[in-house]
Image (cartoon, rainbow, N blue to C red; front, side, top):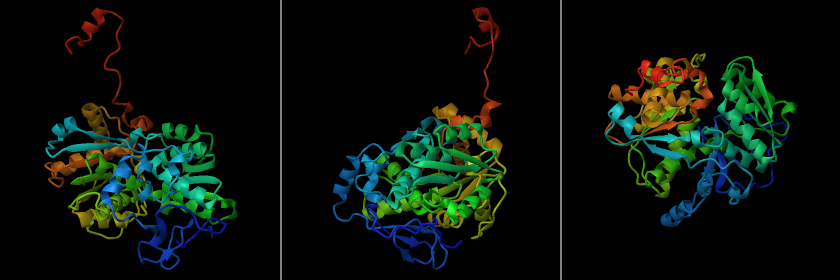
Length: 431
């Protein structure tokens, strides 16, 4: 796709996005001034933010981060945001729990330390609050008045909430058949919510057309024309994990794949921490996790291909149901470079994994978390993931958003009359 902006031209005056220096093409390396563009004008490759990162006293930078707020803005010196970002109206996501999952570790036979990075604790209960917080700052810098997105659900809610807090109008687009919990959460913030007949890829194509039309004047699409800035929010997962581990790299990470952007930016964040000297440089492996009913990257990885062939999604893990993932080829590169893998699990395994995590650690994950836990279990059983190494598994959202996935098998143990005899007769007293 050719480089596009909204109908208005990118800002020509300098913008304050902190250490962000330019946009750089991931394919040919061509650099562009900071603006609301997402594709290279030379080769049509995707753009990402290039930085002038801090240099010099590592311990001073570490102390600055540790003294910062308990949210993603503690990492402002490493993000495309102004210095005073923490003072602006924002949902301030991040600094979510890294749970030491000893019960789950025993169940899976992990001896090297197993952790769940539980991003269900964010303001709208998914990791999408991180990326939207970044996009909001870019939208302010470029003078947009409306925030928009194409979404499988979580992003729609995150945009609606962040726009309400920051004083933007919002209009978001979703597939027409999303889980009802996600529809309600996206609509409750008062913005416009539009269902598109079709799947996520149909929604995304529609949004790309809207950006090039005068109707899109003044609109910032967080995951399209603001995508280079938006995507940087996922780096904060890498930063937090390492800081919460005592400024150490984990040995292994299991990350869900929708577009693939989260996985690629986590790797970018880890590489930045190494370059800055904030963590010791050592090998780590990144494993990607997909649902079998939408597994184009897993399919390509297993076949040894470099090209990711689109698939038509058919899975309960709708937040991962992107049949043509933009960052798929980069995920393949990272999995192979780090010695990781990309695996998938079927819907039954997703449900089993959701219930396993809930039963062992008291964490109710949405279907994407069921995918990562299920893939972790599968990789351990296959001898691919080393149980003797420190492993971090991502849960990116709250199970209350995807109740339908487990509702049928998660019901009352018994319904009894309000008497002790009825309780005894139900056979529950021994428990």
